[in-house]
Length: 327
Image (cartoon, rainbow, N blue to C red; front, side, top):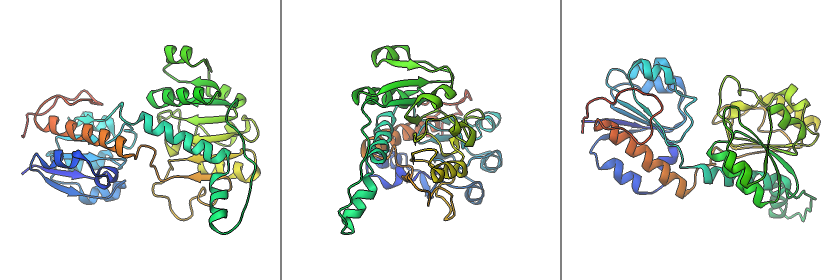
């Protein structure tokens, strides 16, 4: 019998047609609650034909333990920085992903974080709940200059929404510039991330995690920013140095940090950002809406099934040949 390891919790926790579609192939489904560490993956890795994963640590050692039976890794979502892509290619394992399914949802979440921080939403709502009529003065985002770092699908959706809020928009993409979007929404082009740092009131992070972007936000880069800047991160937790961000929040160098992602998920109790002032953290739910989960889950499921049939998936990260079908 075909055996599938399903580790993404968004997929498991949200109702929708993806459950019936996965069940339709008659496979044995082993469920785990990710994101799983390398050690946890090594404990359960073994005789599986397919892996439908989230942000689990899939290292070369994990891949080696899954071989030779593993025939496909279907990533739920778009980020593959936790997966050894080169190892998948070396071992002949097709790696699929789900581009174009969550950009609307994540962009909306970025503005949720931005507005909540700008208007002191949580502090005031919690104060009222606790019997205190606390009224704090916030900021409009209209007229503020927002710097969008990373101009893929999500970054472009943030640009569209920023224009609707009548913000001044500056964008930086290391390898890509969306000319039509820039013209339509009057986005100025920054030649470097440093140009964003020095000129913007709000910085929104949507770039991929690479060796170049890791710790993009750190002590020396925050020194270049306007005092009181608000940083929003719906990209990856590793784009920032958490300890440096905490220090900048405590000193007042930056005005706030709002993030949906952390460098440790879930965080340890002593994570530096959990008790930092002016810090708003949501538990990596930027793409977790009923609409987005269904889109991602259905695409991830179809990618998995197509590979198990020996057919080309909807979207593949590497160029590995698809093995002969099992179903």
